[in-house]
Amino acid sequence: WNKRQRQSSVLSVPAVFLSSHKEKMDSRSEEDLSCPICQDIFKDPVVLSCSHSFCKDCVKKWWERKPILMCPVCKRRSSKTDPPRNLALKNLCETFLQHRAQPAPSGSEDLCSLHSEKLRLFCLDHQQPVCLICRDSKTHNNHRFRPIDEAAQDHREEILKSLKPLQEKLKLFEQVKGNCDQTAGHIKVQARHTEKQIKEQFQKLHQFLQEEEEARITALREEEEQKSQMMKDKIKALSREITALSDTIRATEEELKAEDVSFLQNYRAAVRRVQQRPLLDDPQLVSGALIDVAKHLGNLTFNIWNKMKALVSYTPVILDPNTAHPKLILSEDLTTVKNGEKQNLPENPERLYLFPSVLGSEGFDSGTHSWDVEVGDMSVWALGVLGHSVVSSPGRLPGLFRIVYCDGEYTADSNSNSNTVLPVKKKFQRIRVHLDCGKGKLSFSDAESNTPIHTITHTFTKKLFPYFNVINTHPLKILKSPVVVSQTHCTAFY
Image (cartoon, rainbow, N blue to C red):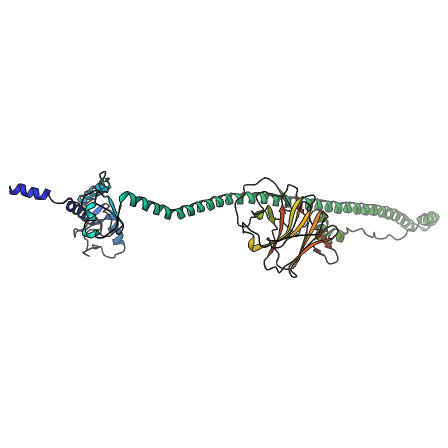
């Protein structure tokens, strides 16, 4: 009876006690099976002479930093540099790891660890699931509870609400990364295209210089051949005269050496020979016989540069393709722009998206600057300047100063909120834009007749970039300025 009662008393032990005891045993087992150095489950354990065990790699690394081989726990000196493996401990560790890796029985996670009852409520004060017994316990006295499903739904919604900003931020990062990937590819396309254009431009210059070199070498050789032939003819004529005079002198000298009777007999013939040889004018050196080196080398590079005026040109404003609206198409030399099909371009802060517009590549904050624009028969266009600080503003352009032509009417826009109709009726083909930063004036006039159209007066505080707006497919072109070379001062002015 006593034995059965003891068995009964054991069987009547609450499940919570058994569960708690098992958890303590598991915790204790993990502590006993952990290496004192790395605090992790033993890996290939070895045992020292003092009976303390360690991971083989851990104790070796420990000993590398110590002059004496001693136990990391009790500091007792080790008698062996290569301690034996602890196979029994190794087997225990492997068994423990296998047991810990096994999944928990189905449904066990829904049971209270204290009472082995199903978790039906959620304590709002402790923020944890509890069973019905926990609700009535002293631990949760006067606490607020919710059904598990309601609490789970509320907390899911709370997590989703907290997660939404992160999801939006992730989406933004992915969009920016996608744009960066597109930009990286566009950079390579830009570099290859620009490199090709640079090579083409230099090829033209190389060809021009090569042709100039050949022409000047040809001129030099023609002069060399001409003057060499002239000297050959001169030398040949002198040689004939020298030969004739030498023959006369030699024959006469022979007569002079003869006997008196013989000399006198041939005297008349000798006199006739000498008198028949006319005395020519003294030979003269040839003037201008040498190569005109100064003509070929004097100011050579300047003369070539001066001749290059027909080949090169200067445009006071160059369009910046990185600011161009995706629908605008720029010419190869970046001086002409027209409207076309939208291009797949990467987004960048400098690009204008509000209007189909493009900016000049160089901004101005001092001095005076002018550029002529051929608008031709365009029905809609706008010209002016835009402040640097507002280039990246996607929805508004408050720093824009311009005139607009639309279907026969001119308007001035100097603050993006008000338009002034201009009393101008004539349709101009070329517009001159003149910016005087010092006086704060932006003037527009007819480039052909110099007739004023409108002047905007403002105190400019930002760097201003030339602004061009194109609506239709008719091209808008920035006109080139003539290259003026001053030979008096040997300098060039644009």
